[in-house]
Image (tube, rainbow, N blue to C red; front, top):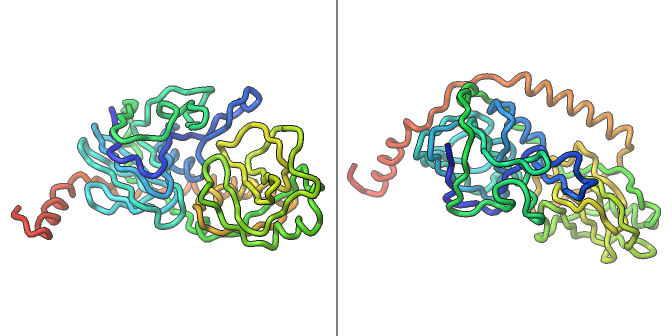
Length: 336
């Protein structure tokens, strides 16, 4: 069982929930930036395998054997054998079928999961790729042209064929990111603290899975940014000496030596995951208690969503392959 990467897309990596419980040993968590989209994909496809996380421009994948797959998260221009296909629906692919993901229409990151799941070794109990450390995923790197990725043989790979779920479109429109006070908030003047929540920040072109660099009004700490290195949390907002905030994401280092003015509420991390360079965001303060309550409610709502997944009409697009080729040839003026 295998798939072949014909084109890798802009930045595609193998991810799972992340490398949990190993930061004290120096391992970054890595893992899917939009964790809810990834977990929804696992439920739809019916296994606990990893996903290919696609960023802004997706890959072209050839199925070397029959398989099923589902695409969750951002809305990408997606086709199987030149036929448009829906996201958030489990679809069958036959041997030789080609899945093409173009540019993201809404959002920035989607996840491709397979009924015969990707077969790669775990590192520190996780499949997640951490490119800077060159560990996990497929050979510790982003995918490249002509990569052959083996898949496990799962006799129940097609059990969830046709399963479908509603896509959360609100996540793509939301610009407000809720934050709680950071451990070094007192290193900033009240004026700079107020600036953080009154400024429109743009995500820099230099942003990646390690962190989002922001451009807007600067908020340099009053006595310099350097501190004794200490552990950093996912979503920490570091402010170096230039005053431009940096939101630390999944591939962040385990410790950092810059002042941290705030931390993004966990419930809003998937919103950030669906932003791309050039997008704008706003910050809004929230108490720890309110953030915790919102997160608990989100988990309840998400569990309910998983329980409501319905079986939809089966999508076996392989039968449309020859038809789409004939239509394509006719449009070109070629004979059948």
